[in-house]
Image 1 (cartoon, rainbow, N blue to C red):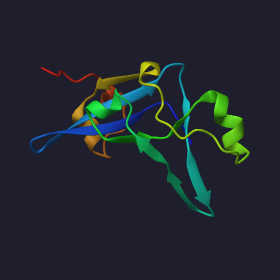
Image 2 (image 1 turned 90 degrees about the horizontal axis):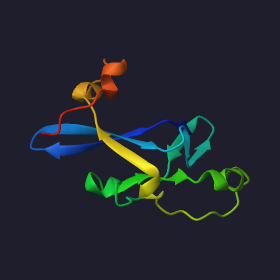
Image 3 (image 1 turned 120 degrees about the horizontal axis):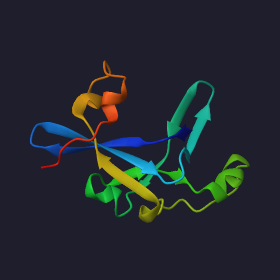
Image 4 (image 1 turned 135 degrees about the horizontal axis):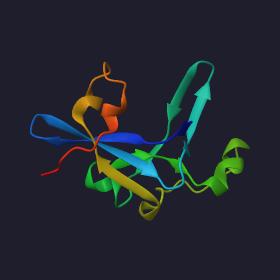
Length: 111
């Protein structure tokens, strides 16, 4: 699966605060499995960046491993390097499926 980011939510009491995680260099691939019309995305332990919000993260593939993954070859299933990712707090507008516009990725104040 290709993505240009993914969200994780941090709990603050009853409020769920969204964070947008992105990989340097643009779109990236998340390891997944599919059969027929069913699919699943693989997760792994969180790297140092993602661990600040959640204990797991999507299994982001290193571009060097794309071909091997698609050829069903064995690749290292390890967390993506934190120093090649960014995380930013974004608007709680993303918490509702009714919201689909740019307001979903607007920065949220963390103070």
